[in-house]
Image 1 (cartoon, protein in one colour):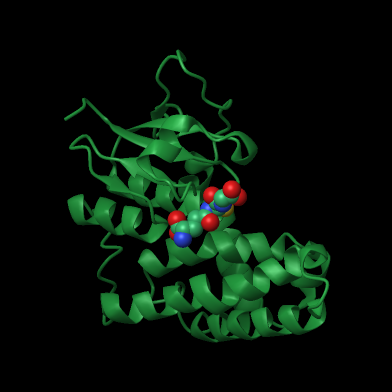
Image 2 (cartoon, rainbow, N blue to C red; image 1 turned 180 degrees about the horizontal axis):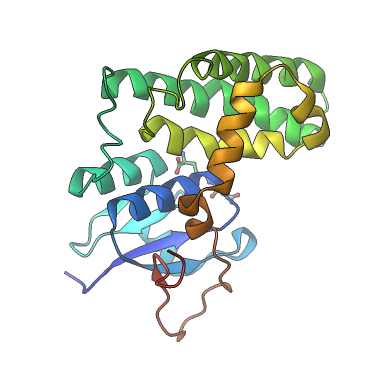
Length: 220
Ligand SMILES: N[C@@H](CCC(=O)N[C@@H](CS)C(=O)NCC(=O)O)C(=O)O
């Protein structure tokens, strides 16, 4: 047992954003250690040799190193906004859409955003295939405020950071595509108090630093 939960995080990583969104929504306080991907702390790699962020070490010593598992763990402790149980929908249905996001959509997103790393691939094909997923989300959002009804759910907070990442590849193009409902949903997410509260900037952690608590007490 240690005194507190510890989160290794990277501000701009959509997986780490997802973890912070879950922890913040659940009101769970952690010690936050901001990292730089090129220079990961040895302790983080000791906890999780696959060395991706986020890594959450619970005060029991248990390590959770998959972002979706972090969110689900957090919300199972405390879920005041019922993110795990949206009206008329099941957790299973949400997990299916999240799997599409994390699998094919993220695959095409990376090959659009980092196309120089994939010289054999056709960037436009990947952009097109990623867009098909986004049109599907737009459809869901045409008659409801969020992906699984009129209240925010697990699916919204876990998928939105990736849609934001895709939108930022070419914002002028993205804003002109035929997905007005998706745009409305993304804008609301980006402008939300919740999102602002998890995007506070921290200097990279160094041994000997004083503890940085997340959520930040000054960020709402
Ligand atoms: N499946 C993992 C993926 C996490 C992931 O790939 N994070 C990226 C940063 S966005 C990372 O740490 N990559 C390792 C690296 O770039 O060295 C999760 O959901 O937590």
